[in-house]
Length: 196
Image (cartoon, rainbow, N blue to C red):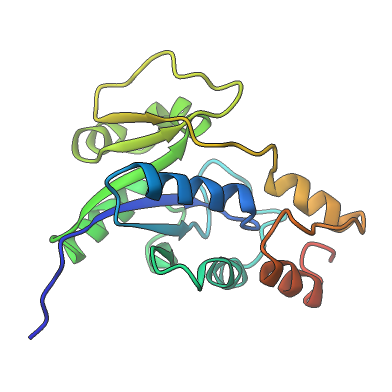
């Protein structure tokens, strides 16, 4: 007999191109200071707001996220959007997950930069009405206008690290040690990701 355990699951969406310690520090903070039992890092094959140039193959990005979190049972690398229509609209993913796992309560985890664009998202009113959102502050994106919905603002520790900067370092032949987990760095360097 399978017993479904009710869980509060945070969904942290992104390209993770590549995942870095800044992402992981935020996930750890959210798990430590909220009611979430788990966080699923949802790798988006194609963000509707971003161009796909310079985007590592989604399966390689998924593999890097799995390497980054494999020793932490609280965090899961999720490929759910790989099997949904592209580009990846958050509302479609939420609807699918709600139908597949009705026993769980899903929350969204996002930075204040993403929150600033939320009103441009497909069916954003439905998202706000049905899903609580944990927003962590990012410099330059103060939350001024709160949209109607269940919003919980977090002051997560932020590092000035970006995936864009990491890709630029790799292209320039600079070290990314300490910016990404060691297993992720090894994999990136062995496969010469972002250098091609």
